Image (cartoon, rainbow, N blue to C red; front, side, top):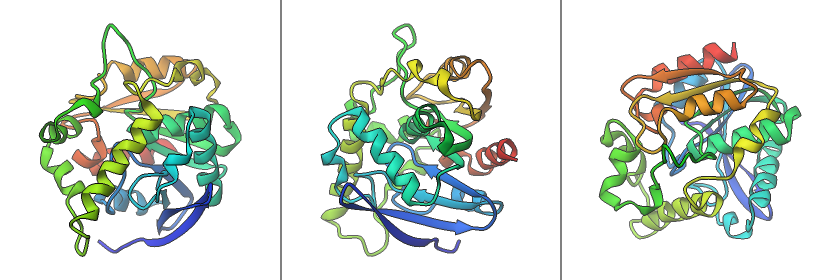
Length: 260
């Protein structure tokens, strides 16, 4: 698995890492809970057919400290818009997962001209008291792997210190990523996104891991119905919240088939 090209763009005065790999039409990817500390097989699957561009959200691994300047939900949306523009993704297809999925949906709703086609993997943004989501920030550390993936070892591999990482700085960087997500989605990931979903005009695919323990799979229908009833849903067997870690080939195929 070859490494992607790495560049940086500036958002609110802070550098954010951007990975690029592959060829073909551009596909932007906004990562899920925990960000992307390392390049993963799922991205390689996408890069077989697309130029995959992966900008790191403020506060996420490779995203510097820019999350501390974002005080409101609007601040976050404007920062993500800048990030996509400066990564060269305006008007391209966009894929978002988990917390990144919520931002991808927001971009398609609030800035419709910035997204051609949209794919969402278990996005945050909604909360149903009758079928409540889990709070990932209220978990003991040893419970998180099984919460994120059907196979907990997939999460453990994602967040393991990469070769050459500073043993003191690495845990701080991972805590920072969780803090950034909490600043954007506290409490319980509910940003009242349902009010804006009907504004989405882009053809949308909503994917959900069958064994998602963070957001109930029933939320897939809630998203699809809210997006003018026009979004298509698909369940991924043997996959948890971060389905792209559990089943990289199946999720990539579903995404690429949707994008055409």
